[in-house]
Image (cartoon, rainbow, N blue to C red; front, side, top):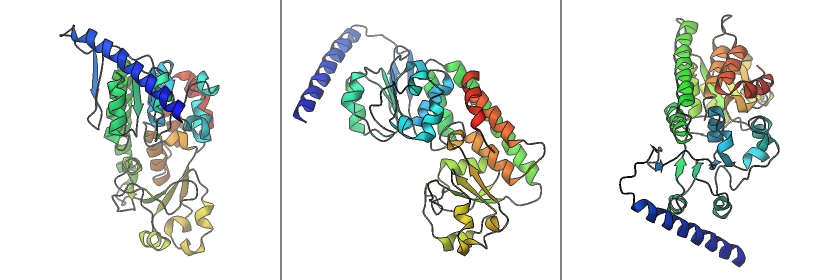
Length: 346
């Protein structure tokens, strides 16, 4: 442990010396204007005078954004979950041959960072979701800007796609994807109204994966935004992101539909105490699977909304599978899109 601490001190000291020289040089250029500047949702200002070529991305939805923008070659570090979670690796391996070969470094996870390992990668930008203010300040003091992503609302998705496209020098591609997402949003809203007609909105209970059928999505969640975009009503009234409920509450809510996250409907059908729920009686339980295609913290929220809308309001003119395939093909380049759409199953 002492050796590791000594090594870290040397690395930090060396980095600080380098940054000090760099800052001294820049102080002589009093009127230097930053070419790239954005501010993340937490208020962290990210300023750079050139497009970063060594990006450490420790939030897999943001890594997905980078891949959608076609900037994979700028990545030097990714979260460990990409290799260890089959739901991620099975698809991210098509994004970059280095991921397929597990050659890109993993100096952290979606939740943590190993600063020593991160520094050795010499990143010129860090994108993450969970870094403490002290860690952000430490990296900033070393001349490493940090962008914190959230992906908690649809507006967040729009902002972060725009911000990351600016940071990585992919502005035109970012604008193209944002325009596509806005167009789809308008289509979904109109379709939901037409499909529903004079009928009330279908009520939907959403449940998370790994058998957590009594863990749902509250009104203050990205999945709730997917439900709204699909033209249905979230049966859960709570503002909590992921509230836990009991069977009696679910019986009281009595949803028209149940949407599951990569789990078997048998988890519900096997519970006799839930048999009188409308969604269960009418066999209206649907599954967003594989999860990769419906991640609500990326523009693939459009895929989730398309599927839920199609299940809630069946329409012969709306082929859900074709629309999800269309969205995926638009979000990625043709090679990646063609490699992964064959895994879509609806």
